Image (tube, rainbow, N blue to C red; front, side):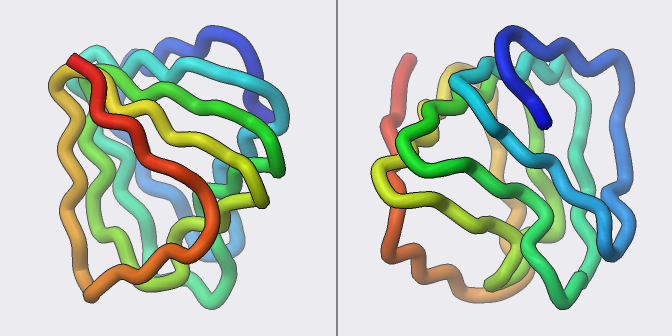
Length: 101
């Protein structure tokens, strides 16, 4: 699982069945990278309950309705230069998004 500071050096394709699981508070520094999700039957970006993840300088691409799974009380802090590329309409009932900048 992911926690602490994480730096991506290149873009990545998340294969079906793979996921990014944020288990403790974390900051993901993309440095311009793109995370490309697949049309998976299971969530591919999972944030544990009560955990905060901050995104910076990253693109999240091919986001489907089930790409994210947010635990109760989880927070997504959206920093500078963050882009979401949606493939479908989204409706999230758990978690909180904070726009920073």
